Length: 146
Length: 416
Image 1 (cartoon, helix red, strand yellow):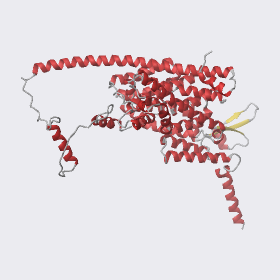
Image 2 (tube, rainbow over the protein chains, first blue to last red; image 1 turned 90 degrees about the vertical axis):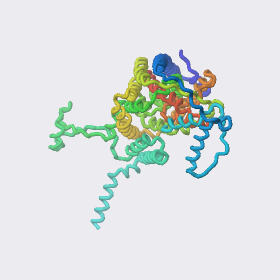
Image 3 (cartoon, chains in turn blue, green; image 1 turned 30 degrees about the horizontal axis):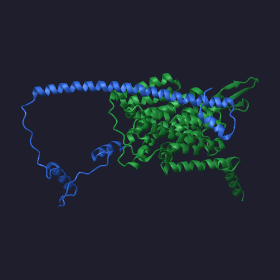
Image 4 (tube, rainbow over the protein chains, first blue to last red; image 1 turned 30 degrees about the vertical axis):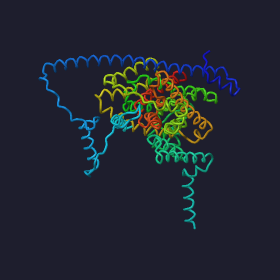
């Protein structure tokens, strides 16, 4: 006879005896129900893992081929290399000057043209496991409709 | 003086023929109580916005059917009138029938109430699969395809259904009714209505009201269970970003699920099949017009019919019984157990993946899309404000819809 914990635990608690037919019905429905639901959904997990793996490998090989083709084309048509322009020297040895210029422009835009002076720029330390502000803003934008 | 007497008699006659007097005769007080309950549900729908799209029509259907003499749910009847007593018009309209006693009668047909005819869509199991068509057209199964492990959580949250079945049997409910009560734990209104209409149509009113009430109360019922079963460390887990799912994968998904589920469990085919048809229309991108119709016009029309007619099954004589209280209690137990099993399986996944899965997404394994996923997100952010669990929770959430349809199929196959 198939058994499940619930009916027998309940019977023990209440001290009542379950009739055989009721006990059998509960055991059959509970066991069969849980087993069938899990078997079907586990089967779907295996199918979709295999299916996802196939798709990813196909996509990766296509991407690889496309990258190789692009690289080959770029090699053929590439102009003679010129030295890249040097970025402005860092202001304090840590933050590049162009970043400081962008931050200053953003502050000026936010302050509405009022005169203000930036005294210090320091990198904010975010706790481990947290997203950066940009990543958080992106996630927020995508999940806002929900 | 005679004129006044005539007026008084007319007023009395109108009053005695009105529904008002019905509230004060016999069991009329029960109707008055039901009208009060309907008004309270209307307040919840309008004032508190608890699942208003369904609760409002359900409450109004309940109100209509409990107004004495409204006749909105009257079944069609026929009346045999002896030919001698029938008028010429009746004879011409309905024709004559000779009964076995040798007498000739006129069979006069009286049509049923409006909601009786609309209710046929529930009784014949038509509306719930149509609602599933709309849900499928609105659902994005991407998070589930990207992380198929979510199916486990969708299955785990259905365990509560089967334990509640045992509870209902122990409380003395017949097996078919017990199955219908237990399916409330799936937190999926259309599934609960579909199963109940097939197994125990007389209990449709209390079961549907309980199912939709708990769906509306997801943000109140689930968080304490989630907090109780998880540690702060587990709730703070930030999950890695899901992979991008290609369009082809999304198109193949509904086809594969339909084939697998319908072959293994044919009784789940109407619900799962319509859910997946709606999703295929959405993802294929070639039938945008009918996908939009399924998501909007069809869904809205069926929601009105389903809500009003399900509400209209909550007649006083059926609803105001001790059994209804037991159904409400068992429904709550089913829902809480489903949530708890989802979270417990989430914890197991947390352990087996070395802390990569946040157990809070397990509670979204009960259907209630997307409310249950939103609750996972909200409880997760209480511990870690920069944590976005929503997309991760949507996987188990849509897996729960498939899981509850499969559980419904099992109950129908075993008990039907």
